[in-house]
Image 1 (tube, rainbow, N blue to C red):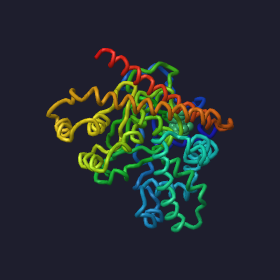
Image 2: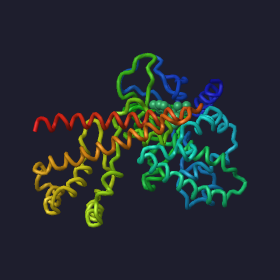
Image 3: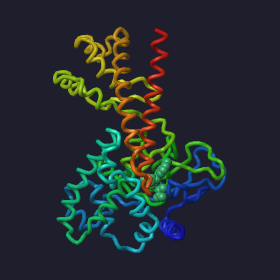
Image 4: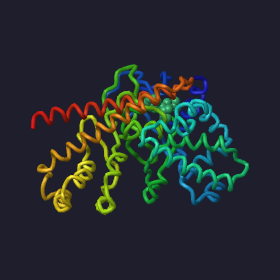
Length: 377
Ligand SMILES: C[S@@+](CC[C@H](N)C(=O)[O-])C[C@H]1O[C@@H](n2cnc3c(N)ncnc32)[C@H](O)[C@@H]1O
């Protein structure tokens, strides 16, 4: 906690201002933000001047010059790895440790555990690992003195703590170049909904999205995404996530022939098929399944909004239910494999088991809704 106090004192000195909040450690979530009085909706709790951020504009000239072709993510990670200023040391001292990250991030897990992740999480992870390998190859060539564990650590730190912010000077930038590290604001933990941000000349202001009672944790929504995404990008799975979903790509895509795949690509409906506990198949899922169940002409008309697809709905529902029943078998097998893993002190087995249980619950809920829907037909 002393590290946190020193960092907060330094941050105040840099011009960060907060009111009605404090920072404390939460079991299993690291440091978070707590209300120190009852807060009304819309109260400004944190003001962070642009000059305290680490962005494209604050990269050291050596990193900017040598790595101009790389993503800002990689350039920020290299810049952090090479920084040895005293203020920066105060920040890094209170960051999660290497051991914390290694336990929670699938990126660091051994291959046998990575292979047990659900398909969507695996896809995100593989793309992270591919990108990381390319970026490290370029960074190590430009800065041979850098050691890989440092770069890898900061690469994940940037991944888990940077926001996409748009300051006026960034308006013309490529979206990837909006990545910004904002000290202190990066202490908010995540939940389904949370604090709001507004931009004022030279500062970002963080305000309450609702009333908070004294002692309540104040959170931010990092992304309205599934737990597969939160696990691979941020290293945790919340118990409650109204944005959670099951990705059906691995079940639907193999059912499509080449012509059907082409039709979906042309219409920009290829992949990202999901179900949630509240939707019985998202719009994209409805589109893809209809292509399998209906004539091409009927499908074209559905996609163009000529009709609502009501006549083919029961066929679509039946196909979806049979896919979900098959998926239930996959889920149960994966759950069994994860449950049989040897317990490890990092809690990774527990995370895998919880994730598969969550997917099982969503599928069971959707199937029970379908049962009711079919009964009422
Ligand atoms: C932006 S930082 C938030 C501050 C962080 N807790 C700390 O100690 O520095 C994001 C990290 O906080 C943790 N975190 C955030 N929200 C969480 C949640 N709801 N449950 C568990 N861990 C969470 C994860 O480790 C995540 O990678």
